[in-house]
Image 1 (cartoon, rainbow, N blue to C red):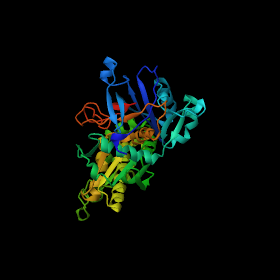
Image 2 (image 1 turned 180 degrees about the vertical axis):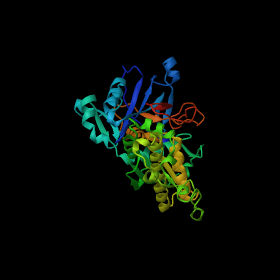
Image 3 (image 1 turned 90 degrees about the vertical axis):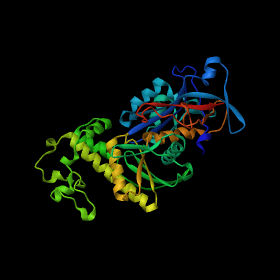
Image 4 (image 1 turned 30 degrees about the vertical axis):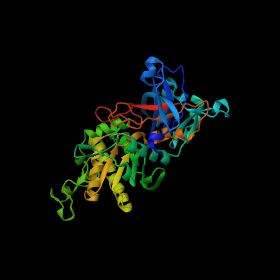
Length: 411
C-alpha cells in the first residue's frame, strides 16, 4: 500500500487529559515490549484549534477530512516487567485507543493491535488487567510492513555507520527491492524482501540480542540491557580476545588478508591466562561479548545477501540501540566479507518496526459509525509537520520513549 494512502481508523476518549489517543499498537517480544501510539491535543489542525473551524484535506479523491496534528510516540518496556507496561497503558488510558466490534460482547469490544509471541502469551493478562482483546497480527508481516513504510516515507530513515562516520542514505523508491532485512531481537531473523507483502525468511540465528543480554548478565551481573551496553563502551576486548597478532608474534597474516588486529578467537586468551572470571574487568567481558555477537551477525548476514545476490542489507531490532560500537562492528564485518561491495545500513526507528507495522494494520477495518478514519498526510520533506514524511529530531536520532510530530486526516 502506498504510504500516502494509509487509512488508520481510531476512536477517542473525550476525557483523556493528554488529548486524543488513536491508536495504540504493541509488539511484545521475548525481551522487550514496544509501544507505538498517536496522540493530539487538538481535534483538528491549528486553524481549527484556534477558531473552531475545520480545515479539510482530500483523500482517495472523493472524501474531505479535517487534519489532525499530534505526535507519534515510541515507548519500550522489558517484557519481564510487563506489569509496568500495563500500568503505563492504564494511567495514560492508551487502551481506549483501539477499535470496536459492535456485535461483540461488551467485554470483548475494545481491541488493540498487537504482534510478537507475547501477543499470544499475554493475551489473557491484557484482558484481565485492561479489559481489552489483542488482535494478533503476524510478526513478520508487521516487521516488513513497518520497514517498507519507513523506507518510503520517512526522511533520513536509513544510514550507514563506519569508522565513526554516519551518512544518511537516499532511498530510490523505484529501486528499493529486493533487499535483506536483518532483525536482531532476542534471536535473529533474516528476510529477503521483494516488495510490499512479498518476503521470505531465508535464514536466522539463535545468537542475538537475548544471547548478549543473557550471557552478559551471567558474566557481569548487569541488571538491564542498557547498563550492559554502557559497560561495553568502556571495555577493551583485546584483553580477552585472541588476535591474529597474538598468534603471529604481532605481525599480519598478509597472505590471506588478515591484519594483526583481526580477532582469531573470541575469548581465546582466557584459555592460556591463569585467571578466574573475577580477575577480568566486567567492561572487557561485555566488550568482547558484544564484538563476538555483532561480528557473527554481520558475517552471516552478508553470506545470505551473497547467496541471493542482494547488495542492500538493512539491520533493525533493539539489539543495536544506535550503539556506535555495535554498528561499526557489523559494518566492518559486512565490508570485510564483501570486500567492500556491500554496505550495512541501519534504521533510525530500528526497535519499533513490528509495532509500527501493527499500528498500520488498523487500516484493514472498514468504516462504521464508531470509527474515526485517519490518513497519513504527505508533506514536503522540509516541512516541520508530516505523517508520510516524518520529522527528524534535531540530531537525527530517536532515543527511547521519544516522539515525532505527524499529521493525519480524520473523517
